[in-house]
Length: 174
Image 1 (cartoon, rainbow, N blue to C red):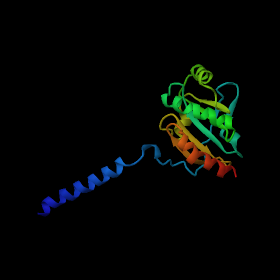
Image 2: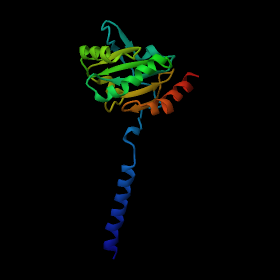
Image 3: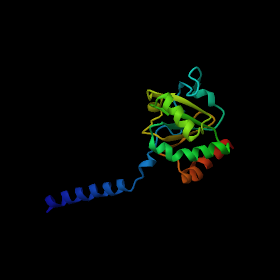
Image 4: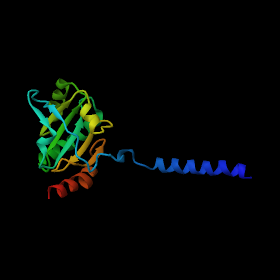
């Protein structure tokens, strides 16, 4: 009898874990960087390769870092919302052009609009790795002290923007 009970208990435990896993949202993967200083970087600007931006240049202000690429289909999905957010002037948006070709990225921004205060080039993806980028697009909210407060995996939606990102930005700016 015990011989049959043990496999049954193991099966019930396994099914329980499976059911819990199926109900998790893959976009809500917790980032180990939340609450920690944003990784440091010094990268060339997209529009002017003679100039750079460092992670320290934004100390003292709340800002968004949006990881994007011209080859990214999901980036097109969120892009009109980012353009609209940029026009509102609520928070500066900096672009991290990820594993892309400069000419294609510039062409993409010319075609779809440029919501970024500034875009920087991460052509080899090393800074993206430091930030724990799973894929593009991803968006980070970084506070005045250079600490990552939020990470959005996947496209920013109206709901995420209005219910999570903007309230957090306003609290951090306050």
